[in-house]
Amino acid sequence: MLTAYLYIRVSTDEQAVKGYSQRSQSDRLIRYCKLNHIRIAESIFEDFSAKTFNRPEWNKLFTKIKVLKHHSIIILFTHWDRFSRNITDALLMIEKLRKLGVALQAIEQPIDFSVPENKIMLAMYLASSEVENDKRGRNVKLGMRKAKLEGRWMNKAPIGYRNMITSDGQKYIAPSTSEAEIIVKAFQNIASEKMRVNEVYKLCIHDGLKCSRSSFYHLLKNPIYCGKISITEFEGEKSKIIEGTHKSIISFALFEEVQKILSNRQHTIPETKQINVNENLLLRGILLCPNCKKTLTGSSSKGKTKRYTYYHCYKGCKFRVRADYVNNQFNIVLKSLRARKIYKEHYSGLAKQFHSDNLREYSNKKLMINKDMEKLIDRSLNAQQLFTKGDIDYDDYLLIRENCKIALNNDTKQLQELAKTTGLQIGAKEQISPLDKLGFMYETSGIIMKRRIINLLFSQKVLLDVQNFKNMLPKPVKIIYGIESKRKISSSENPQDIDQEISDFIKNAILIDFEQKSQLL
Image (cartoon, rainbow, N blue to C red; front, side, top):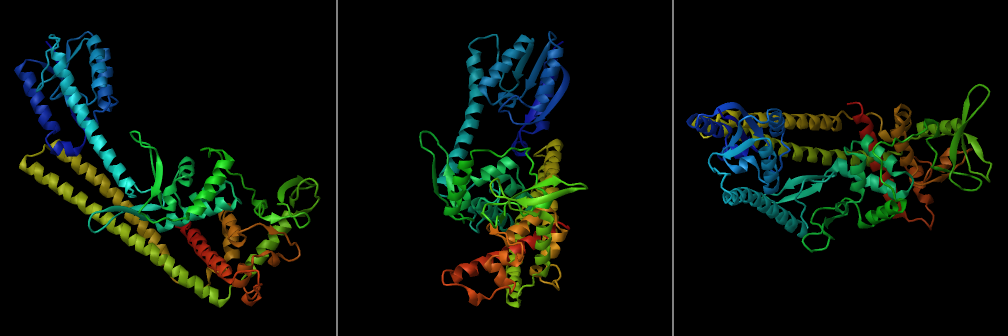
């Protein structure tokens, strides 16, 4: 007696609703077996695409059949597109099964393989499914390309942006405040050439950016951040870069500067390489030799009882100084800094704006998530109604309901994370301005945050002054903390540039304060 394996496949729950229900296929196959006196060995239910045969349940079935070769086995399905939507793969699989002595048949598109001419009909059935897939895929590609040529980004928003929809249903991307700030800082740090790319990456991850090292490297080379869109080569059309309709988060000049630096380095970012930062030499790379003005390096040497660490110059210059002394002087200066009232007020104003922007972003994200949750609930209720009417089977109803449940759980987790972050931003007002707490923040932070604070104070390399560390501070920092008066700006210095540097310092201080607090969550 012939033994049958019933192969029942749906690719998505939408297909189930449109008539490819598992229960419906199963009923028709069972009825066919009863009418033709075929014994059913097993029913295989597959929820996977038929573009390839790399499907979980099909692989299990094929392995089982190889063990049972030379038995009278037939694999039954309703239509040939349930078997495959790729004519080449399908014909290869049919040949493999034929060698194993296994027959195939689509009960609603039967093929008599003993008649050679019927192979033409088989090819038509298989080809029509593949053409339908290819046509749908091509239409999607052309639509996406047309949108890109118009300057619109239609894919999932890249890191630093979020997907948005206008009131009339047009999709677009907009900067995500928190991630965009991190990315801007990353480009600025690389352009300054004070930090290696891996160091910048590690800082970004510490600040909350979520991406792999390789993704970060590709991010740095993506022109979308300077307001442009890269169009790949397609059907004879050359690749090109066009102006996008989205808002840029960095300037084109900054993007070009970073590309030059990356191309000169000629290296990729290894996934496993770790950054080794010596906590006793955190100022290395910032300090310049007071004798020859070269960048100081650092190292340790073994004494009689312990190891001593020094900042020192290179061969040809004998300057060196105990690292613990320099580090201690830096700590003393940090703890002594007290900002002028006007800049504390400036900080408060910018901090309120920063939190307001983040709250607005939170509201937008919350609205999008709530809309998605409403759609999922409607979809689940609609499936229940279709099941009640008998339009879909119970198995398909369970599949839709389970998918909706998983998606709702994910949306709930996102809302909880957003609420937690927002709760931090709208916390109680602090008694002491964060501008006055840099010393405390430095003392209680890890290595990465300490480097952030160092880079906040020293945006450029500075000549070491062992006698008076405050003299090393840049003019904008001295003005903020009352070490110098703004009236002392020389004729060679631009007051507007000084004001911009002061504003940048305060903005970065806000980010550092927020990031340090977020570690406590």
